[in-house]
Length: 623
Image: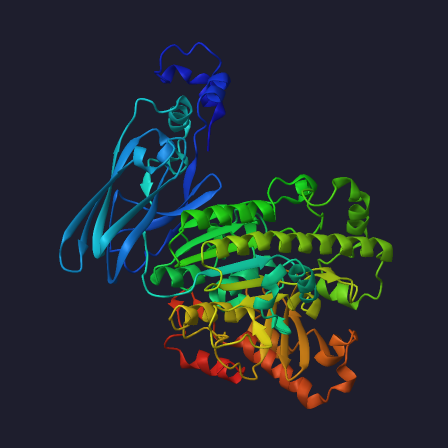
């Protein structure tokens, strides 16, 4: 880390003229250096030739997949007429140029060169480079040539002097792994995750969609496979359950324990093989590249929304959409784009944005009272067995009003995104998926936030716009696991063989639907089949699933519900009206799911040749 004492006492080691001014003042006057660090290794896209190693590097709020060397080669069967990439760290004070040598289909050699001056304003830290060709090319080499500049900022040189860990030093310019545009017809893809968007909030979202609302399907019975942000997004990106992708959620920002298993396919990794340029912007530290979410993205940015500054936040959905629009404008002419955005405005503490609603109209005392009155949710069984709900109904009504305003605001900003997609001629052809990563509970069973596996939490709002002219419609029952297979099918790929999700382009069979809650207090699994839902609670084995011995002892607690009755507002346990055979059937399904062989383990990916795993999935109704 930076040793500030060494800065103050070691000034004599810096040879930059007469340093008679206070060191802190000098640092303020100089250009603030951008600290960079490697946060994740990443398997190169298959068209990048070995041994070109790439890794995810963090620079401020940006994340890029960059080459570890100054040269990167590519070769692939599908020709391309355009290559896009960034020079990351271009503001480091070094001069550079990128020299490219490319080969067309007929063997002609084409050369291109880009210098720092060619790439944009010199104050930009990361500069975009684009090479275009009259004749498509099939292979090439990019070489980054750098030269130290005497104009390097004092702040940069001081930082490099006193920072002992090379990982945190001001890095030299680096080549981003290039994205090769694919000329084949495939849809632009937009995946929008709205945090804490429950199913009945979709009406608020679509009320401001204007003429776009008729383009979206709204499935009646969607399900998420995780109960909160971290495991839910892991399932969204990989198409497998939380216990299989293994990212059940770091408790502290920056804790990389149990990230998404690196051998699992993810949406951006899959799309990178098809020549997509992928960009992500997120508003929560739980879904950063450190946890496996950066693999395959060309651009990744954090717009953090902090709970302690919610009412004065500098970034919200408006800022996120502004960034998406900027990327759209930069990527104009390239239909092979994937944009992922995580929108956090509807999350607790539910303050409506001041940019749309008068800040004085928000009663912050009400939010505090709501916080104080919510029951403790740290012990699931203690919570659901309690009949005491201390919430003030008037306080709850006001909180729900704020929540609705926040959802309404998100919808108003998404219209701006749709307008820009239409301006660039991408809207009609685009596959757009809007989904809650989970729902939200407002005391329906005395439970609040996103704690349980009850419907208010695991039945999120989902809205889908297929590409215009598609011959498929979105089924009534959709799982979060289906998003990756649906995107794969849309771009001509087959879903991974281990993935239990089903593309929405296909007929969805009558399948067993499963959601996990993997937490330090208890392990819970929800199993649904033919309109009956069972929730089974076992002793935890956090962060893994319970052991076979635990499952053999049977669940600590059981709940049963008829979905038809729940839809009519009856949220009580319906165990007495459900016959024992059906309850036993759900109980057996839960035990079979929990004890099945993991899709991945420490030895790597097992499902491609493991017939036992596929048989378990078949028994659960996935095949």
